[in-house]
Picture (cartoon, chains in turn purple, blue):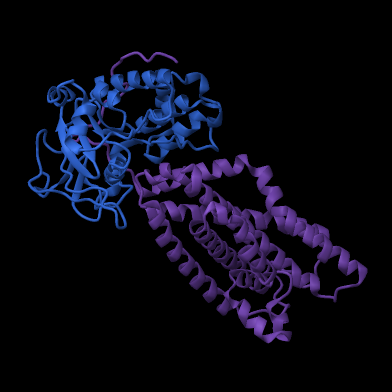
Length: 279
Length: 259
């Protein structure tokens, strides 16, 4: 082992009479975020494969092959594309926060270093949400041109509702990330398998990603049962702004639901995060 | 100045200041982890908090480092209340955890530089300090390695570097040599002696008597959440026939040291 030589402190030892000035919370927040984005950049290839694989495979089968075989009706592709983007956004946001939270609290205890940063505990949690939002939005931006490439021109697809689209994307990312954080602080490492089977998979299939919500008019009880699923509002919100000719949920209802869900998930996640942090 | 109400008080307080009534920080749930613990640690002191497993050492450190909320009593660390001014406390302390918990997604160097950024240290200064600390702690050659490739002792040194990089007023160490082989432990002791020689205030918990004896200016002996004794190692040992801290503890607590 290397011997350490006795020496004077390399820089003045702060004392109670001369403390360091307080660090603004914004600066700490940005430092935490820059670490997360650095790691995300480094893991970019894995991130892209993880987020892009499932949606694109689905697009290939349901957005290209089945229509080509004549198994789908005209207009299905317009209904499908926003749903695929919704799925990409949701999964990327959740994955950016859920599994890391489970492991950081569960066994590595890496969260401890963040909890010792000079910032409130709530802001440590909110930074995780913001980081996940960024990754979710990037995933959707990456998947869109790829899906479009696979499906070809989609009748009814438009960017002309750009302000609505921006609002929907930001709120959707917030709702998905807050939900991801909540899941991450609720479950233990042993429950990860259950989480996928009992929560994530049903959410994906009953999230109106592969079919529009109005299509569930044919199964009325299901139409209302799925309203607890945040993915429904993300899918419908993207339909309302990208393919408005496809029948969709009223825009104001979508926005209201996303705001309420984001607020609810965030509040619950912060409460639980605090409990686990200050155990 | 600081309130006359009781509690743990870590500098900030005037040297020798003593609380006027007992503090009762408690752990969560039914178990009373700490009861009536009154402590004052002086600036520049190496303070050892010793006790067997289950004594309440980790809870005490948890309260002092804002990681555990006490259900009663107060604690002041570096001039700030750990509950009401927790952010200020965190800015002024450095903590070396019991088990190394480096950021595994970053290499050793990045662990230090990003941690410094959390405390508002600018990039250039953080880089300078990181270089210096890695050198002083004998792990400069590991700077760009993934932390998983570092041995237990090296990871612990990295944790010490990380706890120091933002220039804390007080350094907390929670059982820093648990699981280390004798060579690694002695190396770490050297490092801690050097830090103490620089005038730093250090609070260390341990259940290993020789460690507290070797390093501490004063020791607080606790068991089952209660303070059994508080004095220099020499004064405590003088009170036993064989000059052993362990004998002192057994006599005070009425039970064996299940370390």
